[in-house]
Image (cartoon, rainbow, N blue to C red; front, side, top):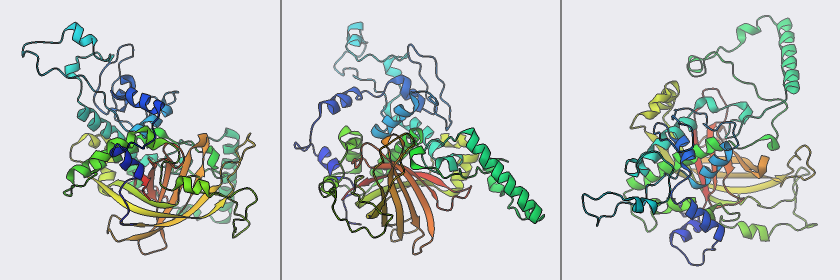
Length: 459
């Protein structure tokens, strides 16, 4: 596990321009289309402070908010889903001025006509540099991924859109709770005195709002929809941290992290089955009528349709808890320089322990692929590189055909759960790009920390 490669084999092949790598006309077209960046009217909404007007569009003023500018529109989730796949791509002002031109010469209209049209109402020479745009997008992304108010039971405390229940079922739930409260009051008049008062920390961060209760009945997988706004922010933050790590590393390598990261946005890494061993599992999947040796009646036949089993590398990022609190109490602190954010790549070994049936969504006659049950170990923590943690979890299909990863890890040297993780596969099942997600406390206390992570399969 420790000696496994740092990145997926497909990524290493792309970096080496290996000629046997499968090509695609569609992939090439999309790569060329994104070469100069995403549409400016979209890119500007990823900024925290930088602003520029776009011809034909209303003026836009960036704000340091956890809510997307496109919230509620049909653009919102698809745009941020694309960012999950590509990462942040700044707008570039190419081509550059020719160095052979006379010093006092300026662009002529003919030269300007040869450039790709950018509908930005400012001179190309004053366009924000890619570095400035990336740094500013990182500020807003940090504001979103470290927002402690994001964790809610309606999201299953993960990167999902809040589950909405109809008013009737919620009213029944409230009435039942009220009846229970009345019965409790009749039985014991001292219950109010025993209720736990909100801590000073909770009051500082969440105000006087009561914690939201878990939904009843429990949320079903088909009700979950990925929140690509949060996931896109996670991609931006983790990728920026990886770039910083690669610059600070004193150990040069044949394939440095800085060389490989640009290939993480290649469309080949989003294709189904790009991770190691995926097609071997597909070839060995159980055929109809075959005996699989199920250990109990709750298990069903299954195969590793998500490319789960194997060795993974998981890049986890976090802020010191005191810094996390300070930035939540005063979000404008994200604008300050010198934020000290931790970034660590942790090896993870995953094994499949069984399969179970997934619930059928209402109105559908097709049962989703079986839920995969997993266990494993991770090596290393924020305290020691040698800490061994045990992991259990599931991988399942959720709404819109997305793949959800849910894992709980124990404290080092213990069987007590300490951290929980919720994540979504990027690209197709078993794609080399891996999955993006959110980690937080396993006990789901109100003042739990949180942060982003990105994991990819390497063997």
